[in-house]
Image (cartoon, rainbow, N blue to C red; front, side, top):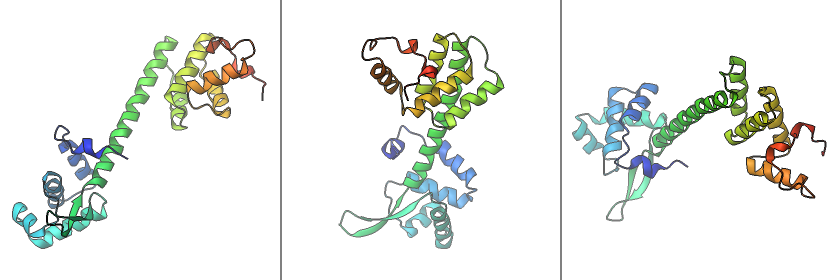
Length: 213
C-alpha cells in the first residue's frame, strides 16, 4: 500500500504529478481544475454549491467533470461523518495517489536498471555489448533480484570469467534451489559443506558442477 501520508505532506509537491496525470488522461480544463480543487481543499466534503462558487462553474459542469474523474479512477466518493457526527460524502484522492506512487516506483526501477548496467561495466572493466544488455534486462524482467544478479556477477569475476552466459546459468541454478537472496545462497553452501568446509569462501564453490540433486 503506498505511503499516502507522505504524498499528502506539504513538503511533497504534487503539481508536476497532477499535470502528468492531466496530460495522460486527456483531462479537460474543468476536470483538471476540479482535481486541483480536491487536492488543495482542506474540507473534502463533496459540496457542489461551494465548488461552483470557488471555481466559477455551474452545477452541470461540475457534475460532468466529477463523474468523468470517477470513471477514470482518479478519485472516489466515500462515506464519512462531519463534526456533528452526521453522515456526509467526501472526496478521496487515494486512487490518484496510488497511480503517482506506482509511477514513482516504476521510475525508481528504471533507475536501478541503469545502475546495475554501470556496475557490470565497472566489474568487467569494459563496456557491455547490446547482447549483454539484453541478458541483464531479461534477468530483471524475470524477477531475479539485483542482489542475486550482483552475487552471480561476483562469482563469475572470482572464477575469472566475464561470460554472462555463465552468470545466467548460476542464476538459474540458484533459482532451481529456491534461493531468493544471497543469504539463502550462503546457507545452502554451508549446508552442503557443513561436515568440513562450512567456513569456505562463497565463491570457492563451483555451482555448475553441483551434482547433489
